[in-house]
Amino acid sequence: MSSRPLILYFGSFNPVHAGHIAVAEAALRHFGGEADLWFMLSARNPFKTEAEMWPDERRWALLQAALDGRAAMRACDWELHLPRPSYTVRTLEAVRAREGADRPLFLLMGEDNLPRFTQWRAYETILDWCRVLVYPRASADEPAEAAREAVPQLQASLSAYADRFILLRGVLYPQSSTAIRAQAAAADPVTPIMSATPIMSATPAAAATPAALIGHAPADWAQCLQWRGEKAQALREAARQVKLQTVGREVYLRGLIEYSNICRKNCYYCGIRAGNPAVARYTVTEAEVLAAVENAYRAGFGSIVLQSGERQDRDFIETVERLLKAAMRLSDGRLGITLSLGEQTLETYKRWREAGATRYLLRIETSNPTLYAQLHPADHRFADRLKALEALQAADYQVGSGVMIGLPGQTPEDLAADLAFFRDFGIDMVGMGPYIEHHETPLYARRHEIPTLAERYELSLNMLALLRLIMPTVNMAATTAMASLHPRGREEALRVAANVIMPNITPARYRGDYFLYENKLCICESERDAKDRIEALVQAAGGEIRYFEKGDPQHYFERLAPSDEP
Ligand code: 5AD
Ligand code: SF4
Image 1 (cartoon, rainbow, N blue to C red):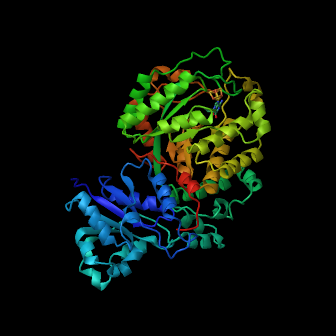
Image 2 (cartoon, rainbow, N blue to C red):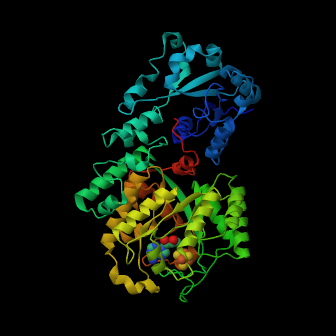
Image 3 (cartoon, rainbow, N blue to C red):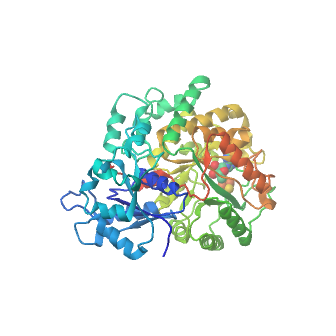
């Protein structure tokens, strides 16, 4: 029987949301990750209406979906099957019967439960069997204060057990989404963001942005994008605050494998377009892909990204499927796998999803169909791109998209519309960066119509900042293209808004041939170099790399379970 600590987190999870996950992660951190945590779903109170409390099956399905791929976390539905009413002590009995009486148990609960704890059935037995991890349910203004006082304020009847209670620090969990909504509606422009963040909020994100700084409409955003100097700094600082309050300082690594530069398409901006005869075409061998995956997994990368030019032939589809299954096997299903393999049919997307991929990146490039038509040959249809993004959502991927910034013919209004597109479509992850010209592409002819490098850099940072304000819980990548424009480009992107970085882990001998645009970075750096540099870069940006963690976008879970309930 295991002697690994087991944390039990009881709740109705109606529905589960990012706040619950944050608390669970904090509890696991308390044990340095060396513990298991079970979400114990409580049965529906028959006296509550469905509006107040969702049916068991629905809450259970969402809980499972939210925990999918989180190695140390598990959903447990025993209370739905044990005799009613459910008493914690009875459930604990069942846990002890299965796990053995020696397994150290910890109850995870909010401080608001403490005053009534002595009314729980057989609470003394519970305290004999378990220690209690208490997390603060602090008011937004004084989290530190409330957290400090949570445990000392144990009632007299509990004080004999004071050593059974452990206070979890550094967890911010807003009281309820009702309170958050009230705050968001209030005039104070900044507080709502601070409190609305770790939890999923039914408040439209735009309503929770600092009204004083940016307006709610894309027309206002187009203005903000053009801010420079002090105003741009204020915009980026606001984004940084929101970032710290939502996704936090954490930065997730995705090891990028540029699997093949063979592409059947002919996008006018791209260096590896089919029509460029100067490209030496390659496909990384399966063995090499898996070796790179294994190295990345061992090195603590929570996820990898498999990216390539677009192919739809059977051989390609089957090879990718095989690679996915092998990658899942070698990581015991723990590795997050993102695909970036262009437009495919719903059937193919589903097939790869079943084989283990959970995320997909497919950039829209621009949300303006007219501009899209200028950037692509006639048979690359904007409508097909949209359809593919819809298919990805239908196949239950965490869906990423993005645009290029500073394209010929692109206006600030276009870019503002891109942000609105991400929001309205419900994109979970965004990778966007500057357009960089490539001399072997047709679009090079329009190089005089684009903003300067410095301008594209400023625009890109403003885009990232605005998006963080508009969609606080998406994952955003600090893209390679940012690094190609400015030596501190990725660092600045991370500091302001991004929370994901994608170090290139393509086997070195292929690197130079995935030449999308000029001055692309990471062509000649060695593995070790890359790792040290990424660490230094993240640190300089005030971030903290989360090794061995997938870092799924909170936005995805909110999209699955939009609700008003805390
Ligand atoms: N500049 C910047 N990004 C580019 N991409 C392709 N060509 C360029 C370029 N010249 C980006 C596109 C594509 C991704 C694989 O690379 O957004 O979706
Ligand atoms: Fe192919 Fe993608 Fe380049 Fe278009 S952008 S040519 S689809 S690799």
